[in-house]
Image (cartoon, rainbow, N blue to C red; front, side, top):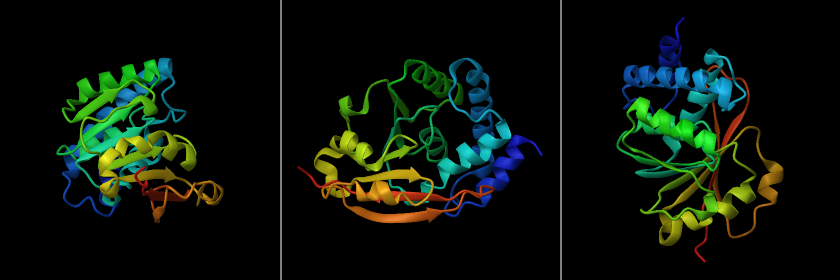
Length: 215
């Protein structure tokens, strides 16, 4: 079974993607995987080396968050190889996605991926997250394997600015993050903890959705 067929079948199994052009998205994600594989040998973008494994562990794992986030302005904190930001941008071309990545080599890869995939709705910021000044009202700040919940919120809280009431922070986690939740200060209330199922992946996944009280 080729990459596109595996992607197509996996995407169909994710609830909430019925309005997405699955065939086109599968083709784009396949190109994206090929690009990651090409750069991985010299830039060490991800520890996952097998393209088939990238389908489940990166592409589908990123997109299970899509039905639970709101646009149109998304910030992906510590984007790395562009996860989950690029899959989200490919699935929702009507949204604006900002990829924040301080590592120069990874940011260079992101620039190349944007060009090769024709992503006109993606902006790249090669900067530390605490120095980012958003140009628009942000709806969702999302992170995947970035840091602890406390550090994610502490470094990112300024992104929502005056839109704090309508902005949500979404941390993509594996097992239920008991200890991290206990370390969250009172100013970062948790709204929902949603267990999500990644097609083809047995490991547990949770989305922690938080708010930030305006200062």
